Amino acid sequence: MGSGAHDGSGIGRMLRAPFEGRTWREFGYLMLGLPLSTLYFSLAITGVSLGAGLLVTFLGVPVLAGVLAMCRGFGRVERARVRGMLGVDIAEPAPIRAKKGGAIAGMAALLKSGSAWRHVLYSVIHFPWAVFAFCVALTFWAYGWAMLLYPLWFWVFPAFTDQPGLQVFQNDDYSLYLDSPLAIAATSAIGLAFTLATPWLVRALTTVDRLLVSGLLGPSRLAHRVSELESDRGVVVDTAAADLRRIERDLHDGAQARLVALAMDLGLAKEKLTEDPRAAARMVDEAHGEVKIALQELRDLARGIHPAVLTDRGLDAALSSVASRCAVPVRVAVDLPSRPAAAIEGIAYFTVSELLQNVSKHARARTAGVDVWKSGERLLIQVADDGVGGAGAVAGSGLAGLAERLDSVDGLLVVDSPDGGGTTVTAELPWRAV
Image (cartoon, rainbow, N blue to C red; front, top):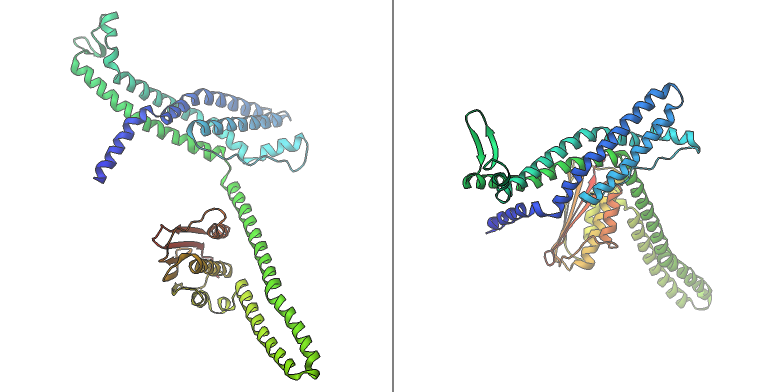
């Protein structure tokens, strides 16, 4: 039954494709592409040739700079056309900024811009492709619909000409006309095949256009990577600032407040030492208990910054220690050939710590498991529980914040948490061995 439904859906898509708005938009994109591309090609070739010829004088520099600026304008038109007709949003390339002010500096920045020269390249190479795509799409589209609808218009030939139908072949002794019922039906069937196939052909042609626009008119991979790194740096800075605020708050509200109270209690005990030794001894005993609590809080705080067991013994021992403090029994399996870089090891530790905290607080699970292994040049972490599920990395959640932290080091977080089916969170980090 599943296969039949799938086939029916596929046939339905094929039958709908010639009438879908997407198909007509893509066809219109190809038809509009030829006149625009002809304009781009003509102006770009003329401008570059003129500028190159004038380089023996200073006039060639402003001419070339003007051509580059013009081609960047063509790029804006093409990105808007792709966005409006093909539904693909291509990011703007980085703006061209001169290090110093003035027209000369601006022209120099344009001439040095790889993005601007890519726009010129697009204006040149897109023209032959636009000619090819226009001819192929229009031919298939026109012939397909004309043959499909041939039964409706074949009467034109006997009514207005001396031919019984459309002539497809002729030599000295024989002529073949599409005039019999069988020939008319066959022509319509062939037209149907063309009409059904043309939307997919048009889609393939526009895919090439998408690749050309994204590859030549969008930001370069280097610029995109720089933008990603700037964003990741912001996440790292915000995370570090949040951690510092948390440490300051924990010190102020926890150990610091307890130590202040302890100092006051010891001061009172000192005053009572001569007057009421028993009361002083009782106060010293209470202060001793407070010292133990303060020390434990400081140890917990230090463990939250970077646990000593992680530095000394690695992830296996550190994660076993974290698992022992979880509210449910946790199985830990660490299979690593060596230790990764300290920074990656620390992120892996705190990732598991936070995920196990979520298990303790929200999962209502009976058991959980932690698996850590190396795959290629990646460190894989998986934390699974048999709880109520329903977790998700929605904006503002702890999992979303954790995903941002991992992304800042080229990591990845995947959450699989169906309602009632438990939760499995898989984290992936670069290995970066020591």
